[in-house]
Length: 200
Image (cartoon, rainbow, N blue to C red):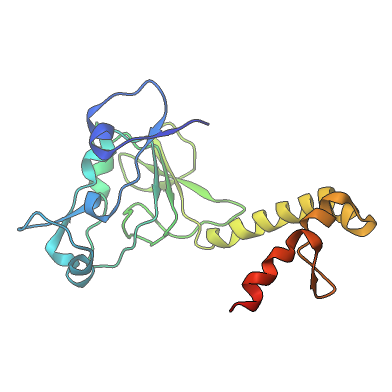
């Protein structure tokens, strides 16, 4: 898709004619209210002393993928009232961490894999149907991480059966060349590993 990564300051200050993204880390998202600094350990120990710096990104962002750690003392990325603002551009939120009313205040709870998206009306901040012109679409699936390995495993298995299993059963030069151990012995192409095995 050729989506280019840019630095936070570029993301906020420039207009791009091609799709870009920014990956925000803790120091990009939070600063100490008085010291105007960020240290990870202090932030996790004293989150109430920090404020969130994300609000300007709402005016530059179409799609937000949220994966931040959050608990009740950590400031939210934005507040529900913010979605009514004319400069709030976000139209789609994928809340991977999926904390109900957490870092994403318009996360109203789990969706399902079968029906993963709901809408939030910009004026009322109430849950609505998805994909409405006046809403923000939210994907908040608590067990989503479990789906990714399943998809990857299925795809890997299908490719293994399609491209490798026949060669493995019938034998092939590719399989022979890739075989390191056979019947407990190093194959001829990998005998050099004996040096490492016996020198330990």
